[in-house]
Amino acid sequence: GAPSFFLSSSMAAKQYQADLAATFPMCNDCSRSAEEDSDDECPMRALTAIQWNDDLTYNSIMADPKNARRHQTRTFRTTTYETLHTGGFLRLCTERGRVYWVAQNELEHTTADWKLHFSVHPDDVPRAWDVVVPLFLKYGLDFGMKARTDFVYWPAQQRGRELTVYMFRSDPAYEEGGPMATLAEIDQLHQYWLSDEFEVDGDVYLAFALEADAALRVAGVRSNGGVADGDLRLPGAHMASLRNEAYVPVAQEWPAAWGAPRKEPYRPLTYPPNDHGWNAAGHVCPMACARSAGRRWAWWGSGGSQ
Image (cartoon, rainbow, N blue to C red; front, side, top):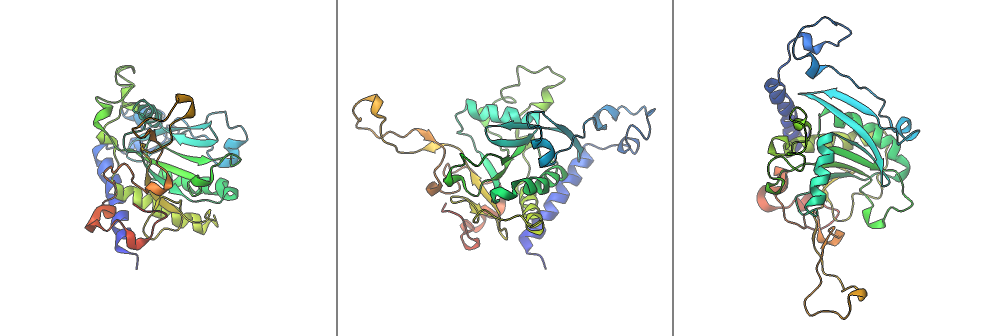
């Protein structure tokens, strides 16, 4: 049978969606499309109607990557996603995800920055995107995911992080709702709000990651030499891993342009090097099984040390 950790995470994912669906109930009419009943007077119509359904397959997007696509899906709420092609990455994200990235930049990447990574051979990234995106939508995940599209300048130390899914964790530094809280119109504020109500249970992410990992293997997607160095391989996974990429102080040599070296060490905030492990900043891990018994999952294996 399936391992207990997989069963528990799958049940958690189903319960999560069931609880949220109960919190945001739809009447029977609202489950129908506008074409089926254009005269429906239900006030929930505007909240549940699907307005965008653009093709999100990799080859379709990359035929014209700067032409943003929009897609809506209905799980426990209607979520609108859009595509972005910047900096050698193809992204699928929500408006809240874009605000989250702004907040991280404003705070110099010192808040928790948990991510799921999938190790994918560069030649298989298009196929991997087409496998993972439907699952991302199926789980109704917010914020965003991305795939590397340009491997000419892909650093060797980033091997194993070809696909990324963001795992939002709130922080007191976001204060009351994040950077858009005082800028957005009141009727649009919900799209940009950052707070703990938008945190998804770690077991849901685990269920998603394990389902995606299995689906990638069924689709014949190859790993890019195993999970990334410095990442923690998820239990039972071959391609999926976890890492907190919040910046940490890292000792470096003083820049020559700054004159003679000083006595105190130069330790600027930096993206955590692989040899600093999967949680260099020491933030609370969102996956309960990673915290259990203090074992750090060592017996499951890891691409790097804690």
